[in-house]
Image (cartoon, rainbow, N blue to C red):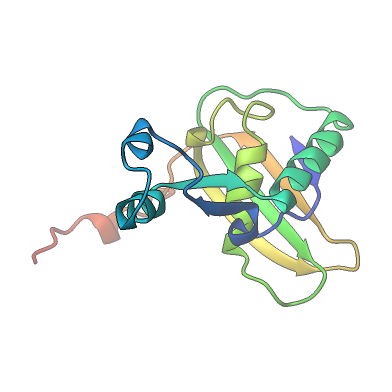
Length: 152
């Protein structure tokens, strides 16, 4: 199955941390003083950012316009990220793409056992994903390099 998605934000831009976003009953007991500030700083909530919410909405719209099927079992995923220029980390774009495909192409991204990722440059930024049932050996018969015992 071949799917085209919008260019995902980097993982750094997909989520944001909010200090003190969660409240616990302990805050009610310590209402003032230094301890309240210390306790507030201890609780950090990670949420999807505005850019992340926009990507999820856009990706859902793009996915609804394409034929998809839910694959069961292990899957192989090939991702080509088409950047507008040579800047940006390729690895930061993978997690948002795999996450947005959960519930559409596979039930959970833990089904991904083989992953290939590449970068291209285009005036039409996008992400092209090919998802197939995984068949075969991860190492394609070349297991000799793993046959020795490691000593530390």
